[in-house]
Amino acid sequence: MKNKLIDIAELKVGDKVCYQPEHYAEDQYENGKIKEIPDHTDEAVRVVYHCCGRWADYMNYTSALTNLRDLTLGWRH
Figure 1 (tube, rainbow, N blue to C red):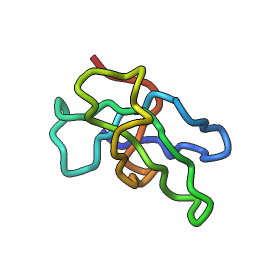
Figure 2 (figure 1 turned 60 degrees about the vertical axis):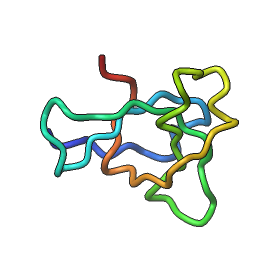
Figure 3 (figure 1 turned 90 degrees about the vertical axis):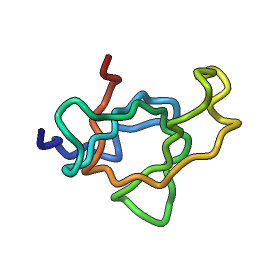
């Protein structure tokens, strides 16, 4: 599945996103929440993926700098 490029100007901290880079299988993905929109790039955001299911506390967990090309808005289930 080819992801549609997200406009960074439309994102905000707390948005739900789905990570699925090209090398993942169609049924392989990771859900996460945007923790930070860094000033040094307009091609990536910091996303929390694993927080033991404690999404209300996602800001207390480590994030990963993730390319926008690998993200879509919303979670998959």
